Length: 107
Image (cartoon, rainbow, N blue to C red):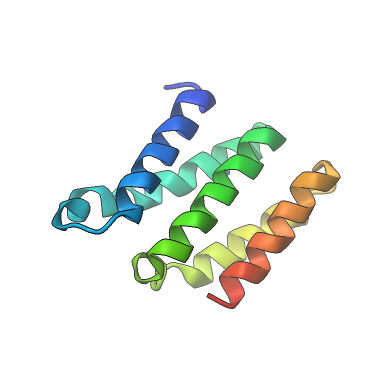
């Protein structure tokens, strides 16, 4: 399995591609569930830096292309709530998760 650093770089690359306008999005849109796995893996391994970065990157993408996520909002909010409940998170990570939860609620 690729390292978290490689998977985070891939998430950022796909996010950049999907943030642009063009007909080439369809194959990349199928990667959105995999993009959320980066968040989940960072959470499971308690990698606060990767967790914050991956959440922030997904927020950028949702801002640019909210329709890609319309069917996922309930799952996203549920996941963010689960992440926020982890007491071992660094304060900065907890703030990122709280901001992301609010952001997804109002997107």
